[in-house]
Length: 380
Image (cartoon, one colour):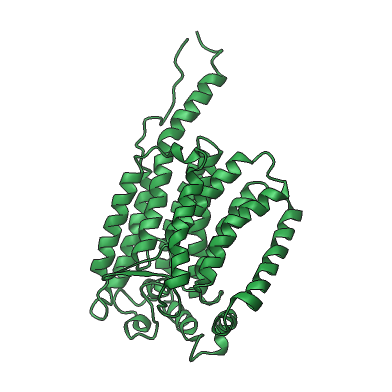
């Protein structure tokens, strides 16, 4: 029998397009931070984190991730990574009003960033085994339990940005798994009931106050709404061509706090203008497109669902961050992928991309085996 040609089956395991887009975004973030290095030297630390993230990417890109399909592995990873979240709520020290970090010398470790990856893994495993009967609402409820535990733990810190992202990851993965509209409406009603319970029985008074100012920050421009207002001013002042690198007055003069993390998009837009923002959107669009392409090459439902989960994870961060920075969404303290300062989220994001590249290594072989099996009766 004649051999069947396969174009691209011998490609490198690394998806260089998505990796290059991520590195370019890291570079733009570093360039934005470097504009204000004389005020707050963060670039050296961030470069170290990016270097660690790249190292993690290349290590994970050459791991055979099929072991995650084994019974108990995904659940075990999820359970182990929940422990630090519980410890933060019970014994953690509040920083800027939230118990979200473990301080390790000069560095801070934020466990929720890795729990998000664990949640994607466990949901991909759950739905890949039950995709045929996913319309049965009990599976929607059980899968929601995984997300609800994480959601509650981060909401009690309180870290509302991460709580929203956890919900969006779960919702996105449920939708691509084939949920019915009736079940979707039921889920939203259950969610409202949970939020009502947390409001009356879970949150303290200061947490409820924070939620109210979170929902309408512009009512307190000298307090909760200050950052949101200054962010919109910074974005608008960039106009078409921007003020130029290192000439962003809103950030440099500290009218815009947390310019290196929660409001780095606004700081970037002020310096680079609409044209720079367009470039930024092209890079993110390329990254998201490549992740969708890798989802289409998934060897099994697990790999496809994992890739889509990573897409929702990064897309949620991107959408929330940009929405907050332009004044469309309440301030939640959300980073933008690969650009914002911080080690935990950078390493977690490169970890996710590395895992996708690792799964890409054996997706080609799986598709080739299926193709040969389907067409084994042809040829001479």
